[in-house]
Image (tube, rainbow, N blue to C red):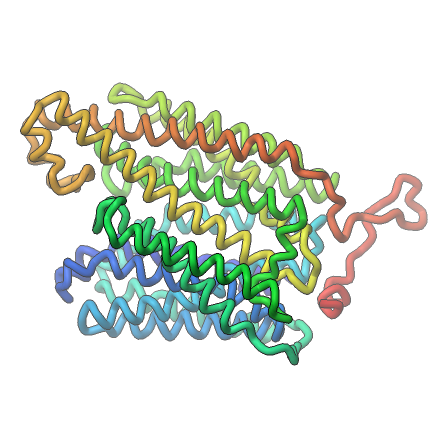
Length: 511
């Protein structure tokens, strides 16, 4: 079991680490390959492919067996990584990143679904700290590793580094993971898969292009919105008629699953949206370097790891989990409200305390919401349950980054115009965010105005994040404490009832 879990954590690390490593290498990549106009597509192609393929990977695992589908996703991810490292121009890199993203969509959902197969929900809490630790390593280590690889080995190794790690995961999973093979006789829901992919693609492109490439009220964005609505409406109609839908709608009839999906969407919305602007505040207002801004996130990430481990242990021992979702929702709201108080005089220690509060809330929610989602579906729907929870969190993050980005940009430009008039408009004319080299060249008066503008922008971002997170906090109160599968049962010789051993392989064979 430990060997399998180690292999799964490597696969999870690959999925989470990639974008952060590549982001650091992007300036060097553009310098060699050119194509600055298409730079955003290097990230967008990967994100689109990941989001669109996530529910399909989950369904394929349910239909044809988890192990083979998961191994296929690793192989596809490694092929995409190798091809990306060999790209000769920006067009090739974008195409190969899409291949890599298709594989990445199966990595996260595969890890979650396999854990759901092998480990009963009651025991799953023990491993929450491990998953939170992988996330922390990716968030902190990604930029550091990416910078070091790019400086010493070249940008192509930011992709090649995935190959040895992926090979280790591939060999270990092949050798040690034993799950029964399946062969569904039901026809694949191709129409549903196409419509769902079209709807998800439209939503992600709206959040990627809105306010940057095109105005929010432009024909392109409105057209994408209409396309997404029509595609998703047709998707619902198709899913009601097919025998084996790619995303069974009946799982949303479960009150806990519907609620925890909403909470996951809101957590992704406020977490990814707000975390985008913490490093910017640290680099601009608190004058931290890019490397140090990553290390300054440690209070949040360490709090998330510690709290996730604590919540998991208590859940395993008591079977209680609702309290953690309620407390987590409250702490995220409080943490965002505290972060909204930051200004140009806020010290790094103070902001670290605020981030620790936010991290504690995330620690209570991140893995607990997945546990509840998996406990709310039948074992035959473990893949689609895991993929749905992952998908809604991802889409929530896309919307959060886009909407908070629009709020931030508006506030920065407004504040600059108020403080220094036309000169402020010139400084922020190319966007509200400036790189460190550009900041260093600003005259002191304009730099001071820009610091206040960034502080004002982040204040509004975190304030809106706190208001939105109240909805998730309220939803948590309506969850029902449904007993977790695999709960401890009384054993002979234990008057108060002890933990009966769990035959994990026998449990897996029932899938």
